[in-house]
Image 1 (spheres, rainbow, N blue to C red):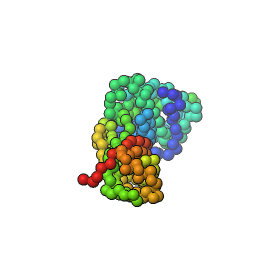
Image 2: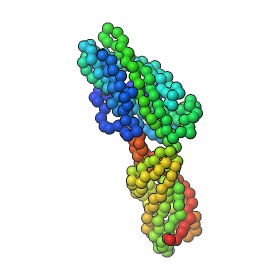
Image 3: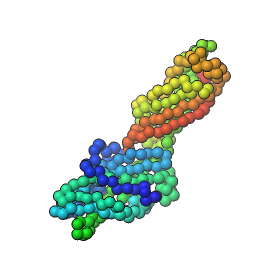
Image 4: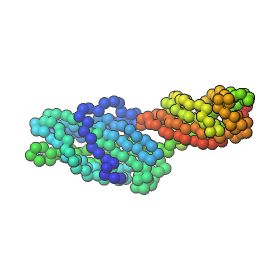
Length: 289
């Protein structure tokens, strides 16, 4: 993993917001000395894709001494399922000050790339989720350059995300004339992951025979269990005079060329993330049952 993938950032005030259910703070995130205290306040996962993810650890620093202290470096080893994944020793270009008897907050991000993870820990590829543990220390220095080392232990679980997919189903033709059609487009959202997801909404564009016939949001609140799929439908009232004779000809000669694309807002135990989808297929036509 590149050095630039991990940065320590000064927040200035306590982190706001609530932790995601899958990233609740643990007792491991608090280290206490008589002089400097480091406390885990929150964990968030701001990014999740099929390439990897990032985790942010929000830490509170309390300086109980009567002299200013500055955070000058941090070092840790990151373990995934008890196997070392990353070792880092990072001096800070700009020390982060903590006033005497004062407090401040920082955020420590960790980037996990699946390609690197699977290369280092092959067994993780077949898992639905994994756990990471960061063990190390924060190094502080006072005005007389005396150092204080505070132990650090942070943990979080994270998913192995395999994306989402769409399964195009037969188009239900309720009526079809030279002037237009009353039809229902149907498809299923496929969840190949080992954990459930909830679709807050699917902002889509639907093309039939190369013509855009519908745009909008569908599937709001739809729950899809792990390794399952669930159907949604889009009602269509088609005007062939406005959309063109090519669309009529395409519907009269199925299977129909279909393209549906857009973005799903996917809610998980680790947070809510956008997932882009773009599916092209050919759909048969059927009469309503």
